[in-house]
Image 1 (cartoon, protein in one colour):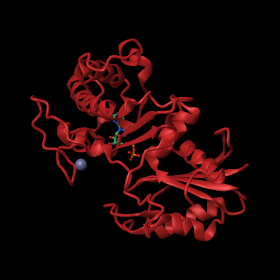
Image 2 (cartoon, protein in one colour):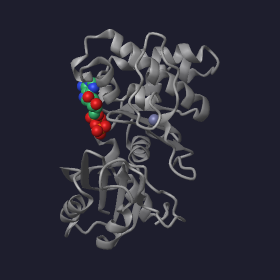
Image 3 (tube, protein in one colour):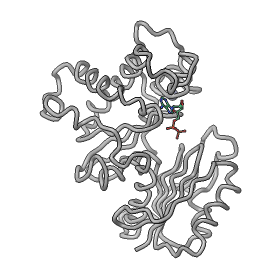
Length: 295
Ligand code: ADP
Ligand code: ZN
C-alpha cells in the first residue's frame, strides 16, 4: 500500500509518500505560512499520488477527541492565523482516504516504537527540545491521550539555586518549556544554543531541568524507553549529563535493571533521526487503514 504522511510543525510542513515498512519514497518540505497557502501546497504534493491512507502528526494544541465537534481542529495555538483551523476537515475535503490524526510528538513516539530506537517495546516516551518542549508517549502500544493530549512540556520544575532566569513560557513563565526550550537558552545566556557548545554551565543547567522532568515522567509512566530529539539535543554532551542526573535524582527509589544497568540504552537519541515525526505519520496512516484509529 501507499501511504501519505504530514508532519505539521509551526515552522515547517513535511509531506511524504511511503509504505508500511517505513520507507519514504518522496518527500517535500515547505514553510508554514497561512493555513490557506500551506494547505494548497499539501494538496499539490498529494495530487495524483493515489495514496491509500494519510497520517498527520500536528503541532497544537489540537482537538483529538473523535466525539468532539472540533475533532481534527488546531485549537488555541498562539501561531497567528492557525487558531480554530479545521486541519483534518480540510484534508478530508480533498483527499478521500482514511486519515489518522495525532500530535507531532505522539506520532514521533509511534515511529520510534515501530521502526526506531524503541522498536518492539510497548511503552516509550518521545521528547523534543526545540522551539518548544513537547512530549509524546506510547502506553500499551497506543499513543497516550486523555480528554485531550497531554502537555508534558509545561510541567513545573524546581528552580536551580544558581538560576535567576524568570522563564519564557507565555502561560507559566518558569515551567519546563519556559526554562529549558531553545528560546529559553537564548534568552538566559544571550546567545543561541548552537553558539554555546563550549560553555559547560549551560548544559549542566539544561540537563538539570530536563532530568527533573524525566524523573517525573518516569515516576508517572515508567516508560521502557525515553527518546529525546529536537534542535537543542544536537548538543550530544547532554545525553550523559541527563542520564547521570536522572539516576541521581531517582536516588535508588526505582530499582530496575533498565536504570541500574542499562541507562545508556534507556535514554537515547531518536533512532529515526529527524524523520521520527514524518515516519510516525506514516504509521498513523497504516493504523487508520487497518481501522485501528478513529476516522
Ligand atoms: P522546531 O522546534 O522549531 O521544530 P528545532 O527542533 O530545530 O525546531 O529547534 C529549534 C531550537 O533549537 C532553536 O531555539 C535553536 O536555537 C535550537 N538549536 C538548534 N540547533 C541547535 C544546536 N546545534 N545546539 C543547540 N541548540 C540548537
Ligand atoms: Zn508553560
